Amino acid sequence: MVLFKPIKVAGLEIQNRFVRSATHEWLAEDDGAPTPMIGDIYEELASNEVGLIITGYSYVNPSGKSSEFQQGIYDDRFIEPYRQITFRVHKYKSKIVLQIVHGGRQSRVSTENRVAFAPSPVIDSSSGITPVEMNESQILGTIEDFANAAKRAKEAGFDGVQLHCAHGFLLSNFISPYTNRRTDKWGGGIENRTRIIVETIRRIREMVGVDFPILVKLNSTDGFDVGSSKIGLTPEDAVEIAKILEQNTVCAIEVSGGIMEAGEVMSKHAIDSMEKEAYFKQYARMIKSAVNIPIILVGGIRTRSVMESLIKEGYSDMVSMSRPFINEPDLVMKLKYRKIEKVSCVSCNRCFDPSGIKCYH
Image (cartoon, rainbow, N blue to C red; front, side, top):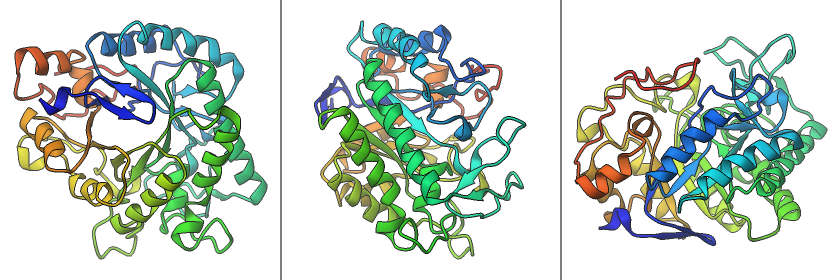
């Protein structure tokens, strides 16, 4: 069965086609240090044969923190607690990748962090915050922050990193013409808007070598209605960006979409029919047809037959889920051995709990 066939992602042998998509757990210390409770979640997933585990988003600089109790990777002191987590996962066959991020215009503004930084000062209507436009030295400094984060991830035993280029965070701010209004080399056409990602990859390669896997979570759309004056990133843009990423040694792309300002796009409620599942699949197919690296699809995947068809019909190479694994960390085992047809998750979104992720269903 295709769902349980191994797949190579760069040099990584992934035991099956299941990915635990990055999920904020709200379980880190105030300063971003990962806790054993986060390790508990990942180890349970690994013991239940989840092929690839992508961690909750980990900020590369305190200025890019987006949420309370979010993981950080901005300091060497985090290497050892992360190493303890990767050791727990690697007792099993699962692979684990650290997702690294800067919050951009969605960063938390507080007494410690007085402004949010972004490519352009475009007000975020969901928060009312107008970010400060980054200057050249701040952009170059952020590239260095990402590279140092990747170096720490490698030292901590992660199997790779995933650059978070989706959901309205900094790298996605740069690739979207809605949030990037710059006229210098960091803005304008697609090549310029993608420059910060390309330069980040180049710097990571200088620090960790050519063999360390770099994955990307990529927005395929900002999520605004077609015809909106806020149209932003288009799927056609995403295809061109994916080509650039492949040319610059990215080994897999997870296709997602939406920013906070566009409303409920990323994690839709009430996925109660097969027709509502895999709501970014058409965009994933466009990207998959343009590149030769594995495509991972996330977004409302809930039934076995849909999972199988996504791979068999050329939408994606792997299926990625977040909420279902909160509800059923043993989901892969149930699909493999009990042949269940549907996950138990009802997409109520109550699991995204600031006291720590948990299922209430």
